[in-house]
Length: 139
Image 1 (cartoon, rainbow, N blue to C red):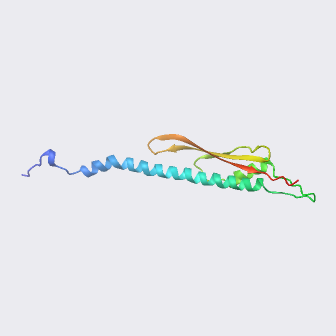
Image 2 (image 1 turned 135 degrees about the horizontal axis):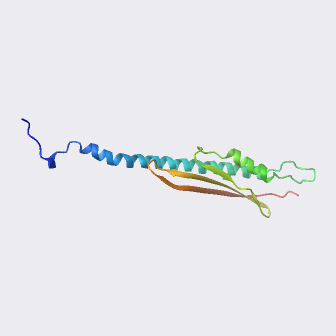
Image 3 (image 1 turned 90 degrees about the horizontal axis):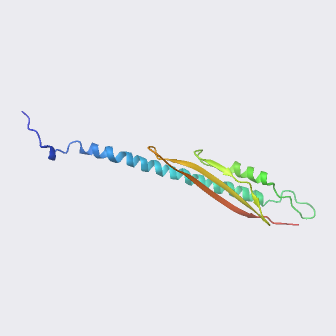
């Protein structure tokens, strides 16, 4: 007959129980790191799109003999930003219409993404980046 060990000193299976408790938390943290990486990629995409829109906004499209320039339209600038933003496709980009002031244009892009941590949904992240572009008047 086999001798039974007392319950208090039997540690067989303890590692499995500890792993069952710790593994979901570890997976959730790793997934959260990937979610933050997606937001970081979206920030880089917004900055790239804004930079391309700013470059277009400062161009002199058709200089005339008198030295005056035709600047790009707001729709053309907005379309350039829309074409150049990039991300993983998880969230949505919204490009605002350029706001024209005296000698400048304000460009802005917003990224919205619901956070998901596998086991529960987190808050929605809204990131906004903007740039002010000064328009040279060559007339």
